[in-house]
Each structure stands twice: as C-alpha cells, then as structure tokens.
Image (cartoon, rainbow, N blue to C red; front, side, top):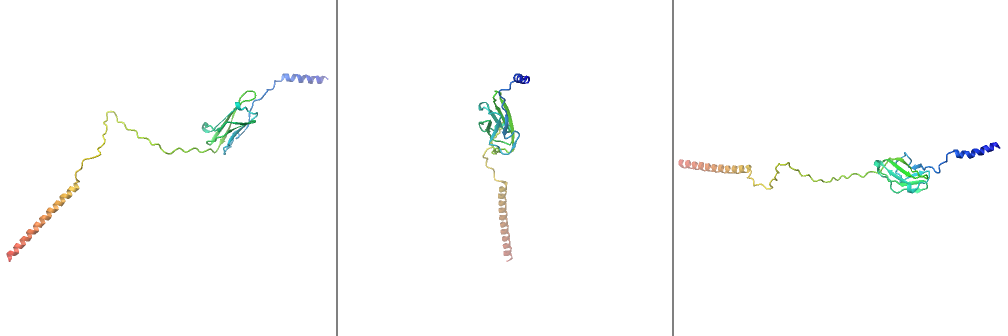
Length: 200
C-alpha cells in the first residue's frame, strides 16, 4: 500500500521537475544528390536536397554557384514533401556550392551548404582571332619644328644620259676616220697613175 502511494507521488512530481520538451524541433538537412563532398564526372540535370521536415516554399532559398562564383541555377526550386530540387546548369569543371536557407516549425531559419566537384565541365567559347584594325595615330611635331612638305609628284625632264652622248660622239668620230681613209686611198691611187703615165 505504501509502495503504491510512493510510485503515484513520483509520477506526479517528476513531470513538474523536468523541463518541458520543445514543442517543435529545428528542421535540418538529411541528404542530397550529389552528396556533400562528392566528385562527379557527369553533371546532373537537377540538384536535390532532403530535409527532416517539409520546408515551406515561401521561406526557402537555394543558390548554386560554380568556379569563380558563376551562378549555376537553371530555374526556380520545386518541392515534393521533404525534398527540394533545383535545375542545374553546369559550367567549367571545379567546385560547386549549393547554399540553402529554409524556415523551421519553431520560426528559426536553418542554413547550410552542400559542396561537390564536377570533374568534366563544358568547354569555354574560343576567343575571337580577328584583329580589329586600328587607325595609325597621326604624329605630331614638336613646337617650332617646320612641317615637312610633300615631294613634288612631277619632276623636270632630265637631260639625256651620258652614255647616249658618248655613243653619238663615237659615231661622228668613225665617220671622220672613214672619210680620211677614202681621201688617202684616192690620193694614193692618183699618185700611182701619175707614175705609170710618166714611165710610159
């Protein structure tokens, strides 16, 4: 009888002494695809986060950034129970960070991030090889320097080359020499004729 009363007394006192349990717990991440720290060669089409409780769309924010903080989220998140997924737009190979911020039933926001490495990214567009023509900058003369004048496009007629003149003089000399030879031959022939006639 006394033992039964003691048990009933303890049952009534213990709930008063123990602190009250929280009405609701914080929400938390339970898994993801890709997993945190994973290395993937094929880029997924969507990134999925799984939580302990269903997150509210109005208080849920998810961002995905790649190398050099380039955004890699391809659209708005979709909700299915305790799962949230976002379209993934892959870029260069490297580290990708999925940052999330959700509300919980007790009103306290919960935030965190999932990191994974994409080992094969999309190729960057090759830079254009066509060089843009640039106009040559005009040169400016120092103050006081005379401005050079353009050379005339036409020039006075130059005299005949010296070689041509030498050829003309040489031709005239040959004519004189031939004429003198003809005169000498004629004189010689006349002398021979006179001697023959004198002998006869």
